[in-house]
Length: 445
Image 1 (cartoon, one colour):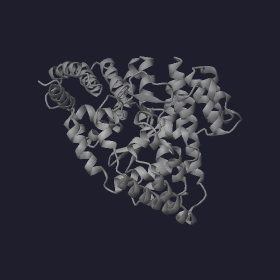
Image 2: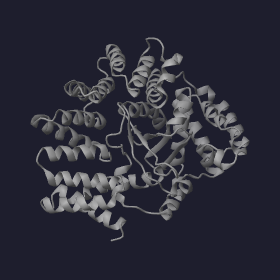
Image 3: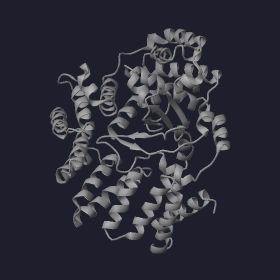
Image 4: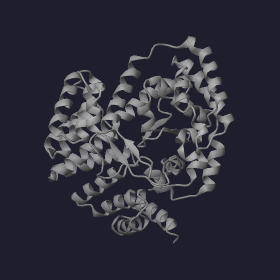
């Protein structure tokens, strides 16, 4: 796995920070539609900062608390609770601009050194687990990845007041250049007003890692007011994708009956229909979920994410042939999207014919190539190899999956099986060798 490990080294420090909660493992929400929404919201911020549209990846952590942070120079993490707390796209873009400023202002250097001193784990396990999705445990439309704990996060994520002031000023200038209302930054800070008076255990994580003072809020208000003349109306694209993301997150993460009673779930607007479709899927109520998704597809027949959602609903209700068709439609409209390819592969495996198993391996291999850090893909790749008479490659993929989940004894066992079954020097053999080396190191052998 040397060729893959080299490509993924940038993920190592990211995971060291993400997998952090002391009582529960941090989890990543992996969903193609949500990640597309975040990419669209991030694009004007990146362009205003003079960076490419693909320079930063934004990922969502499933956590009801309010927080956002960076852990390396290419990733921003936002808690789902913070996204659902906000009420306009500019507020979320202010969060993203602020976290981006920590990257562009060079604030990661000191914290990176602290994190390295806090502890090390196998590069392969961390690298693969960054984009982890818990195998077989995802609801339709949203896959939630398994994580692990790390004591390094608190040290790594701590900011100084000087860093915060610097990031605020840079973010506000970036927002002004992008035409984004800079006063949205005050929306964020006012969410945490009074937090500094609480004991640390009662504070939101954002307030603990981002020092908040009255002077800071006053400075942001004054600076934002001076830049407000550059503000443009909310772009239609930002408003649209923000509404889709909010509807889907709320539909899946909040109590379904509560969501369906809310005014936002009423009517024939696209966001309302998506909110209902997500809530019914989470219940689950297959009949009503399909009815709402079909309504979405009548509005946008060429939307790959609605075809994907329909495929996942059908797959969970064991309508495998229909699920394959929906995933194939989604893949045609968004070729190469790994989360869609992963769903297509699962549906093909469920059909369990010689032809479908061969097609599943092809789809899953493409998904893995485009997103090599998803253990649900690794699990299904292993199944596909086994069904296609390739036990050595199945063992190699299984070893990688156990490495992701930090089950080092199991990873070592399957890696050695793969090494004994695969041609020496082949790509599968090299991946197995990397797992063996990393697992032995983790086990102290």
